[in-house]
Image 1 (cartoon, one colour):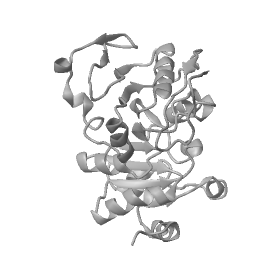
Image 2 (cartoon, one colour):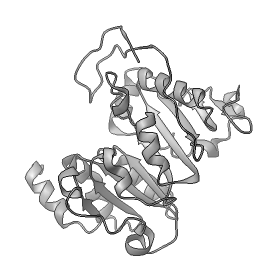
Image 3 (cartoon, rainbow, N blue to C red):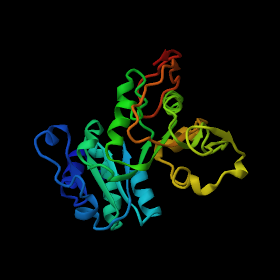
Image 4 (cartoon, helix red, strand yellow):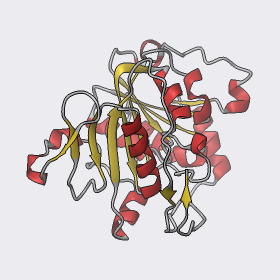
Length: 274
């Protein structure tokens, strides 16, 4: 029999690798492990990788299996979904995986300067109505920059043409160093940056170094596979922030997504938004 939400929340409260600090708690209780994740929890000096909006934790757990020499933390506010990955990793005895249940808006309260090496943003709500709610907006990127190390990487995987177009424009207007930029990850005709900045060149499928795509193509989430089965392409961006740079929002009108997504309840219609 499947567990209900209350039973899942009870499990999560007892899991040693789950930390629950929703906004109401974080306002009252300081997070004392900030800056000390490696020392106090993981007990190693390995890189730390976050999955923001982790849902069931498919990337957190999947990457944890692929890279035992890295530490992975799944972050989301929805504990009932997170329970799946938290339970799976606990049963497997994975010591390089943890979960943080909190609001991503306050993510900078939990990590110190230079503490995080990579960020994965996997299939977030594109938030077509309000730019500041988008997980790749300048509002969020500034927060990531406060704890991401100087050469830290941000990965975006999305089915949303709206969110991809927005993020692509933001990366370009700010001239952010970009390693991979493709509208069809599994196609694949990617663009790879040459040297610094966002100068791109198109390469053939045979020319792409598959090592660059590890993780991005080897793990498919539950919803991702359903989107692929519907014939939707998956967009992927891999880029870096420039330390100290004041980021600008792109001044661009974007056609809204015109399909009903599995975790988004409204059909947008063909309109535009900034």
